[in-house]
Length: 164
Image (cartoon, rainbow, N blue to C red):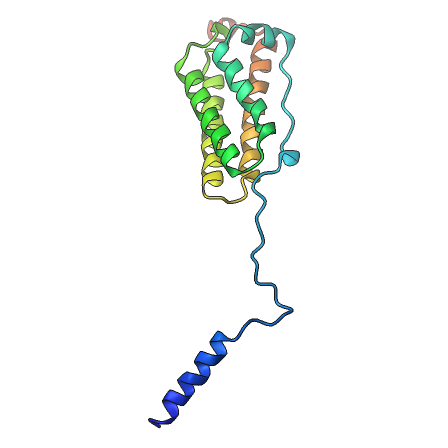
């Protein structure tokens, strides 16, 4: 048994050092980092909402940040754009809102946008496919823009409802 064990170890060592077969592909597949084609398009703002948002510089900066998503080419660009989006979103959150948009519906949707921006940034930093969180991020941003449209289109006076 003593002579058999070193012989067995030598055979295992030789088999482990053997080169892989020619037909086996040993390279790992690269995961796609981001696909701009799969992102939903942005919801257009109504002319009235655009008029109000025109003076809201923090929101316009955030909108320009979302425009820069189309210019990314690699993970590093994606991480930089997402870090920029986080900073711009903080400015919107900390800044002053226009009077009509200073309502909880807008602020809650903005927090959801922030959550999905951070989720997309984490996916990009961990170098996993960032497309699914980016789709969720764009859906949240579209929900924010839709809410701005709803607020402008809503002509119902809330004082009439609460005053009995």
